[in-house]
Length: 151
Image (cartoon, rainbow, N blue to C red):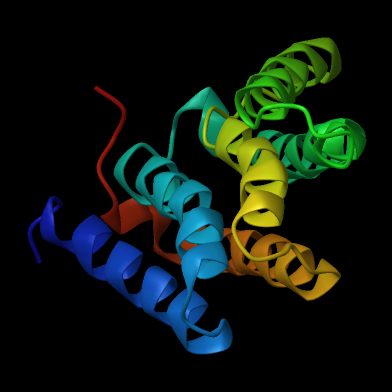
């Protein structure tokens, strides 16, 4: 199989699993954007620093934490742009501090306040998001030799 085809197939299957697990709606779309970006990193650039298990899992965990950290601002009637931008900035700072750079995890940070403003964020979504990332790692490792090398 062509090295460019397998990453696309795997990313399709991983995101299909996410949509099957989550109900349709704005929150699903917001949550799935960071997972879709993670799928690209894991399957199209598996040798990259961002594809390492520590970076992927810790990055998403720190992104989730950054989003939760700024969520109280949403209850104060603050314009959405403020918690949105603070969640992204906090996630970048936390990932740099923890040496867990995973760019898609900034999307996870944005998921929390964005989903709050657009229909609610549940802990179930957070769990499914993290389990999906863990599942991607479990799938990626056995087929890594068939995936593209870092260019």
